[in-house]
Image 1 (tube, rainbow, N blue to C red):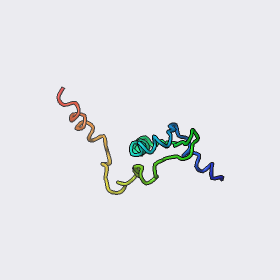
Image 2 (image 1 turned 45 degrees about the vertical axis):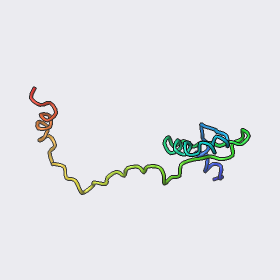
Image 3 (image 1 turned 60 degrees about the vertical axis):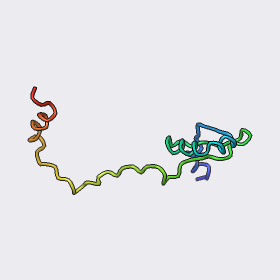
Length: 93
């Protein structure tokens, strides 16, 4: 696999800004990249030269499924509690 193919996901930047703007607003650009996850391309003389993207460790991790497996016990028959739960939601009508 070519290097270009491995980095293709990083090069799909919608926003292109010039170097002067990047120097002036670097903090804002970093916050924008971290917020929406989309990389920003910085161009010199109209030609793309650098892509600013979020580091993988800076993104919130996905929740892992099954972290409560073996720690929570459900009743054998869930329908036993249906009337009680319905009463809690609906009250006395």
